Image (tube, rainbow, N blue to C red; front, side, top):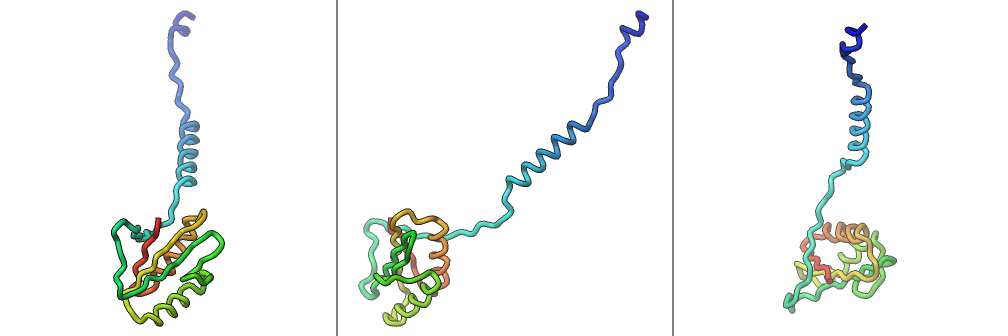
Length: 130
């Protein structure tokens, strides 16, 4: 009997708990990761001493949480490109500069939506006023 007490039994390690932990980590990283591609938006911030040439009048776009106004006239996001085209046709000068002013607590998504419309216009330089 003394022999059996001093003899150590080798227990086999169970891999079940290790597999469970690996599976949970895999689920965590898959669910917390994003697989979408993010686009970049080019911005040019207004700086001191930066001016507009006297040949062209800049267009003034005011963006607020509830509305968009282009040169003082309220427009919708759907009609923004059309209104820009009409104003640019009246001035007949290219390239054109747009001064974008943010008022209130404009969300970044709303700003990106407006910048996406402006990006679709040819020869248009957008300056975001701070």
